[in-house]
Length: 126
Image (cartoon, rainbow, N blue to C red):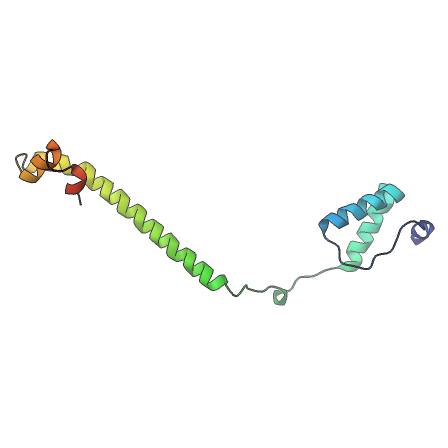
């Protein structure tokens, strides 16, 4: 099979690392010159010979990861606190008027806030 490649004098040897785009281009060139069966065989042969392996020592942590994760957790807690506070505040706003009506409809705070004369319900529920 190396004879087939040796016969192709118009193919140039490049000894360099290539990315995915260059790999696709190389495979297309091989397929064009040698056909699908031979290209498939060569790719299988090279993949077996390369046998890249991955070990735990190959993995590393980015130095800024710790504080980025910590910052994200703080933002998440803050966002959750705001959401909880908003939901609680909204619940109180909805419950304030019925509560005043049931307990003391003539309460001055109730009269002023719900009449619109001197305030509003959002001031009362705070």
